Structure formats: structure tokens, C-alpha cells
Image (cartoon, rainbow, N blue to C red; front, side, top):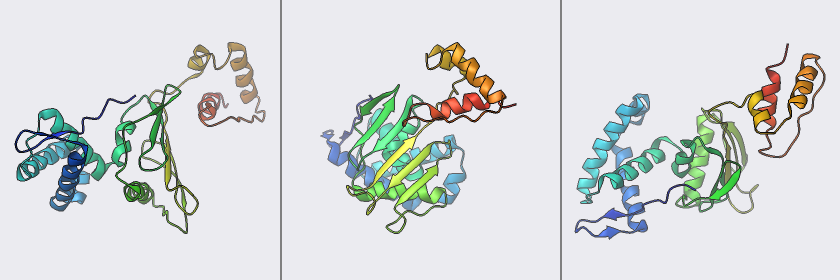
Length: 239
């Protein structure tokens, strides 16, 4: 499970602000940052330089809002605002986590992840349906694809190779949904499959021989069962 989110801020009199106040302040900072940033130039900056520049501007904006923050609170606000502007909003934190293999969004307030083969509920959420639709359209724009009522399904790949599927009304009867299938940072090789007992050594030798003999092989299975992983392992045996 992801760490509990600390959606609290310190008000001008030192009082703690609740989740609603945090989101309101974050939205104000987000909107002001977009107004003051040259997004074209910002996207060309090195990540470290961009982070420092945004941090400086957020400091100024928070002083204008009269909201002194502790260092952890400011870091959280800055990270979430940058995820909104340059990333995929509330799911961006899971894209940074190498242990997450699947991200499943069943509406603005239902975000699940798969980690080590287990499905976990998360505290992350979109503000509303419009916010979720904005992120889905952003994904489509990055790959030059349109998603709207006339074309309500999107299949795409992110820059890191993750597979994305999104559906929206009228195809999605219960509202927009999004799934992101990720690939491990460290590729799984044949020895690892045997170690994980996904294959026996004898099965591996047989399948490798089939590939080298150019026999037809059909790889089938459910979502997340390892089809692509097995295909990648066997493709290394192609003569």
C-alpha cells in the first residue's frame, strides 16, 4: 500500500488545514504556476533545474497566499502540482514506483494498483470526472491520438513503454476508465522464470528447441499471466 497522504497544510494562524483546504490551495498554486511559467521552455529544462525553478515560484505563491508550510508539506504540494502540470496527475506517483505493475482507474475516486501480483486500493483520486478526462486526453495528445464521443477508446504506449487503455462514454457506461500496464525495470530472463517456478528446466529446453526449429507456437493466457515476458524470453532463441 502506498504511504498515507498527508493532505494537511498550516494556515496563516498556525492552524492545520484539512484535505479540502489542501486541494483548494493546490489548485490555486497550480493555476498561478501555469500562468507564470513558459511551458514550452519549461519542458526543455533539465529535471533538476525545472524542479528548482518551480520550487522557487511555489515559495513566492505560498507567501502570497499567506500559507507557511513545513518542508514536508511544501515538498508534497510541489510534487503534486508538478505531476498535474507535467505528468499524469494522481497516477504519476505510481509510475515512479518500480514495484507497481498495473494501475487501474475505475472512475475519479477509485484507483487501484497491482504490486507483486496483489491488487491494492489507494488513497489517490482525481478531483472529478472532468479531471480524469483531462488526463486521458493528455495521454492521447502525447501520442497523437484523439479520444472523444466519436472515438471513445484509446490504446497507446507511454514513453517508458507502458501500455495504456482508456474508454469513455458512450462506450463506458459507468464513466471514463483507465488502465496502465507497466513493465519491470529489470527484464525477466529464462533463469528467473525457472527460479520463480513459472517453468521447469525441461519445459524451457523444450520450448527453446521449438523456437530454434522454427515451429509455430501459440502463447495464450489471461491479463498479467506473463505472455509478453515468456515471448521475450523465447524470442532470444530465434536463430
